[in-house]
Structure formats: C-alpha cells, structure tokens
Amino acid sequence: MSAAESSPSSCSHPSVEGRADGYARRRPDDTLLYRVVREHWPAFRERAEVQGGLPRFVVRDFEEYLGCGLLERGLVHLSCSRCGHSMVVAFSYKRRGWCPSCCARRSADVAAHMVDEVFPEVPVRQWVCSLPWPLRTPLGYDRALCADVMGGFARALERSMRQRAKRLLGLRSVDDALFGAVTFVQRSDSALRLDPHAHTLALDGVYVRDGSALVFHALPAPSTADVLDVAERTHARLEKLLAEHGRSLEAPEEPVLASCYAASAADVELLGTRAGQRTTKLVRPVRAVPDARTERAHANVDGVDVHADVALDGRDRPRLERLVRYVTRPPLATERLEEHDSGRVRYGFKKAWKDGTHAVVLEPLDLMARLAAIVPPPRWHLVRYHGVLAANAAERTEVVPTKVPKPPSGGEQLPLPLSPGPQPEAPRTAEPSRHPWSWLLMRVFAADVTSCERKGCGGRMRVVEIAPTPRDAARVLFDLGLGPRGPPPARPARRALAGQLSLDFTG
Image (cartoon, rainbow, N blue to C red; front, side, top):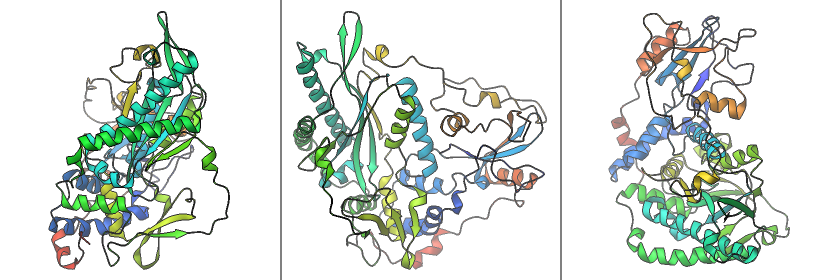
C-alpha cells in the first residue's frame, strides 16, 4: 500500500529481509500479475496500434506499473544516523488506475484525510448505487455524463433524506435540513468488468440550525420504502440526463479503448479464439436458502440498484477509516489471481455470487483489455463532495473536524549527516497534499520505517542519496552489494513482435 517500498538490507548482510515489526519490501516482479503484464503488454499494445492505438493515459499506466516498486528503476538510499545501517526504498509512480500498490497507498491516504478533516463524529451510512448495464460503457468514458449521474444520485438521496427529516422532526421546510455526503466512484466490479458505480458515505441524519449553532439530528434506519424512494428518484433523474446527454452514448474517439470498454461492460471476451463469447466463470453448487436481501434496505428500479445496509457510529474513527479504505480499495487483489489451464488466468472473488460463481477465467490479453478499461481518464474525479461537506458550503467549517496539522512530507529526512559534501537546504513548499509514506505505514500497520530496525539502536534513518534513473540505482545497489554493476538490460524492441500477432480487437 505504499508510495515506496523499502528493503531493510544491511551493507554487511545484504540478504537480510524483513524487520522486527513485520514490514518487508514488496516484490511486484514475483507476482503473477506482474509476469502476465510484462509478457503480454507489448503484444497487446502492438496490436492496439494496428487498430488505431491506445490513449496516452492508458499506455502510461501499463508502462509505469512495470517499473513501480522495482529497485532497479529508481530508489532512495537511507542510512541510520547512529549505527550506519542502510536501507533502500524503491520509487512508486502514484498511478490511480489498477496498480495494487499505488491504489492501496491512495486508499490509505484518502481514508486518513476523510477521518481527520472531513467526517464529523456523527452516524454515517453507506449507500451503494449500481446502474443499468447499457449505461456502463458510456459512463466509462464520458466524464460529464458520469459526473451528472453520480451527482443525480446524490441529489436524489439528499431530497429523500430532507423530506424524511421534515416529516420526522416537524420542520417548516426541507431547506431547514442540511445534508452531507461524500461519493466514491468505483469503475469496476469483483469480476474486473467495467462497472462505474457509486459508494456514497452520507451522514445518517441532518443538521438543523438552532439559533447560531448547527445541531445534528440522527434519522432512523431507512426502510425498504425509503430506499425505493431514492431508487425511483435516481431513475427519474437518469432519464432526464440521458435525454440531455444523447450525444454521449456515441462511442469514444479511440476505437481500441471503445472496444475494451464495450467488451468489459458486456462481460464478453475481446481477443483470442473465443472473441465475442461470454467470459468463462467457475461456479460452485449452492444450497437453496432464503434470499435475505429482500429483508434489507434494498431496492431496484429498472436496473438502478440501491442498497443501504451498512451504518456505523461516526465516533468509532478506526472503523470509519476501514470503511473508507474499503470503498476506495484497489480494483484487483494480486493474491486472488492464479494460473489456470492453457495459459489462462483465474481471478477469484472475495465473496461468491448468489448463483455460486466464485471466479472468472480470462485469456491474458483479455485481462489486458479489462485493465485498460479500468484506468480512469485524466481529470476524472473519483471522489465527490455534497452538501455541508462540500468545499464551497457555507456551513462546512461548523461541521468538519478541526483541521489537524499534516505531517511533514519528509522534512526530517532532508538533513544528510552521513553524506559527504555540503548538504542542501530543505525546499520551501506549500502544505503537502499527500501524507508521507512512512506516516501512512505507521498509521495503518504500526510500522515505523523511519527508525533503525537494529535491536537497541533506535536511530533515525536519513537520506543518503536519491537515485532517480536505472543507471544511478544500479550503481547504488552495486555499492551496497545488492546487485550487479550497470543498469538493467533494455527490453526487446516491440517491432520484433509485430509478425507474431494475429488477434483483432474487433472480434
């Protein structure tokens, strides 16, 4: 989950891995996901160029994933100020598409921000809105349409809660009830299909002004009728939005990406011998049990599926932080990706579907297509604020927690007492928008990587050198006895793969 991962290895004992606190450097190149992407991405991209090419933001996600977390691509060398013990930290590229490490780091960062600076200590409820299948493809590429649809769901929820508050609290107007929520947009489902949908964490009640103060009034748990009201309002709003965005239902300009979107949303294979057929799934027999979902806060109106089962006390900050990390989690988990027969890969679900489906089987190039569809386009907001929690809300300062000072973005590591030569002054920058990697590790895993791991030392780790290029990284690794001299070998030219391809994105 890190912005960078460390390998606590001593200069005298370069084989040592892991720390006393249980933290060890991740090794992305040892995972099946990395091996599949490294082997099949060049062929996938080459064929895409024949058909018109992939947009730059998709190419960048794949290319940078192949270097994310690898010491050979760039690193920071740190050393203990007391005993001289060395540690190297690999760079991360901070992508927001599907890289498990980058997305996990972003998830922890967003969760910390939400708990410390956004959500007040009042009840919070999760509302989930899934949308009709035909709408998922245009929602994948049309930024304006997606923003309007997600905003339409939030407004439907706001209107419903305000009317409930007016009725239950005896207010004169729905305008007296102030609503607050944050929507997190997920672009895929458990089968890695393109499925833009909303996870909205809403204050489970409303604020009402009493004189000069805002007072929070909790509302009872929503009934099935209340959830149905939200679904109906969302559906009605959706019909108006589709009329306004009729042009948005046309395919995007990039034909390859459009094919990836359509195949992923329709759950069909895009490449290979089974192109155009339904994706293979693994199903277990299930016992016939009553469907408990009908007893929960759930409603479906012509494909607009809304449920609001999860609620918590906002005073339980650790639980709230875990919930935010859940709704902002990475789109795939590397531990659930396994090798299957005939070179295919199997992706298991965390929880089996009602019909017993517990995994999806994909050709490697089809996995590439689904990953390409997951990458959000530039300026695509995945977090949206509503009501009193919005940045421009007049009442926001009265509601959100008192802002806590953010930790330094590595300022304490800038002095380099063990480095030869003059030391640079710390640059004066604005308040960092991200929490430091070491601070997040301490918050989530209670692992203090800024202190020396050697027993009885406790010295602070200081930056010795930043190696931003593969050549610099290779030199540092060689000096520490952790790798051969020289940069890693160059990848084979992609042109050599052109004659080996016979696949067609159009199926």
